[in-house]
Length: 148
Image (cartoon, rainbow, N blue to C red; front, side, top):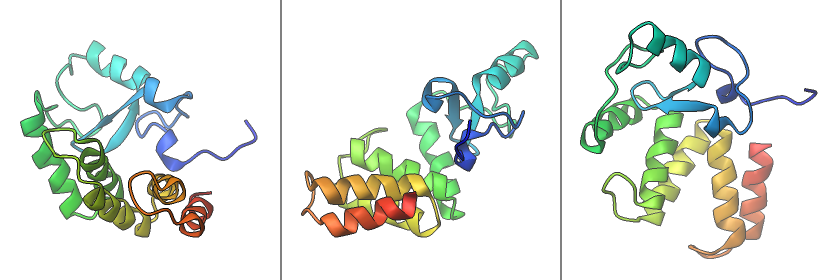
């Protein structure tokens, strides 16, 4: 396509690029924090793996209460994707979390320090717009440059 795609845009099973928009053509599994393409998910279901992750073979949690321990386990291991994902949960108030923007920013910053470009992008948006925290355009631009 002439453009480099982030590492997370490749399915870890078939190694093919996931079509854009990535969120519509794949699913992130909280057990291993891997984004698997819909084709591999379909193939796994054809083989009878309806309630297990096609990548790590862990049982897929049925509710939010059993999802959180899996995410926290990955966070404790220093997984940048899991840290970013948990930051999203705090920012949007998902999985029973209260909306806690400062905690989300701390988690996104930690994920950005681990090299996750998506975290840099979100921090750039937050700081540049200044909607939920004090506006800091230079800091926002810095994060966008790091994400690029």
